Image (tube, rainbow, N blue to C red; front, top):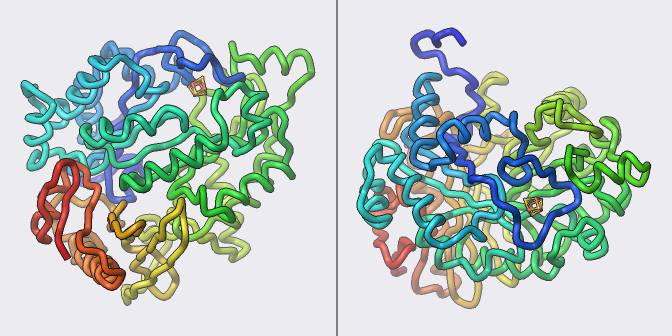
Amino acid sequence: MDKPRKGEIRKPTRTLSGITPVAVMLPPRKCNHGMCVYCPSMDVPQSYTPRSPVVMRAKRVGYDSYKQVCARIKSFQVMNHPTDKIEIIIMGGTFLEYPEKFKNEFVKGIYDGLNGKKSKTLKQAQKMNETAKHRCVAFCIETRPDVCVEFIEQMRNWGVTRVELGVQIPDDKIYKKVKRGHSVRDVINATRVLKNAGFKVGYHIMFGLPGSSLKKDYKLFKRLFSLSSFRPDQLKLYPCQVMPNSEIENWYWKGKYKPYTKQETKKILIAVLKIIPRYCRVMRIMREIPPQYIIAGTQRIDLRKEIESELREKNLKLKEIRYREIGFAINRGEVDNNLRLKITKYRASEGTEYFLEVVNSDDILFGLCRLRIFHKNAIIRELHVYGPALRLGQEGIISQHRGLGKWLMGEAEKIAQKKGVKELKIISGIGVREYYKKLGYRLDKTYMVKSL
Ligand code: SF4
């Protein structure tokens, strides 16, 4: 790779949402429940392949979390990306099922890596990160719906702010067929408990599983938003692909299973994208699986780009968050800077969600805030101001650091007050605590809190 020119940002879309993502891979370990039939088994982290870039990077440093974070930050710096606001994501299996000691050390290694210095304890490392050069502003763990409810407190102690659940498609018959080892009830429970604790909740969805069909997938997907017991904040959408050493590989060779073709995959993706509401963000479409590991199923990693440009040509607008974000819109030309507040209220998991957005006349999104009210409790689950990830404190060309965060917070506080709530909590990444302190919040256990 050539050295980037001064000011040139390589792969700019990586940080367009305002935060620099750092994936940290777990060492290989089998999931406790057994194997889902589509999951490959290749002596690398569960559900990944030996040639996945993130796996190769992690393997080079023996899956050491400290070294992975240090190396990743360095490579973002080389590509000229800002590295002040980092989102950590732990990948590769069910982290919460690993031994206690390992989990705590792995998380401490992450904060040490961000700080560039090894602390004695996790608490010390976190304290140091509150004012560090590379701050952890968001922290995500991927897990199963049946392995998460009992770990809420532990996840908060680690500074986790987002949990991604492997939901695939919510149907107990399909779960049984693909040996998921959990039920739809587990998904509903996990979603509620996580939201009440302030976490952002993402679902991983898989289309074309054994026992499903285009019609069934669409019907089941629709439920994710028509029923208040689901309503995730974020989605990752993948088709089921046949990968080596998975049980469906045998089914495929015996003619018992056939994955969706590219056309079928495209059809279901377009259909579901059209019904995703404005409070949900589609984080990713398709997994980055090197083509040599796809025995059958679509290999098109860039399908999202194709679908979105087709939709834009037809002048069809999607409501989901990423499609409307300013970071992506700025590349498409002039942007109207007259901003207004839009509030969407909806029921979710036995609570009321207020989704506050700052948008312009074209519905381009500059910032958002998620306020949840349930049984007289109020919690802010997300505050995000969009725009290219600008270095902390640097005046930006667009939205960050222009008081949008303060505006959204003020409006959320007003709503909570009107509902008779006495205290507002915020789930906060360790590296955002300083920001909330300036807005009058104080640290109470693992949340930032303010009396109203
Ligand atoms: S839960 Fe995920 S990682 Fe574990 S076997 Fe199933 S698909 Fe693979």
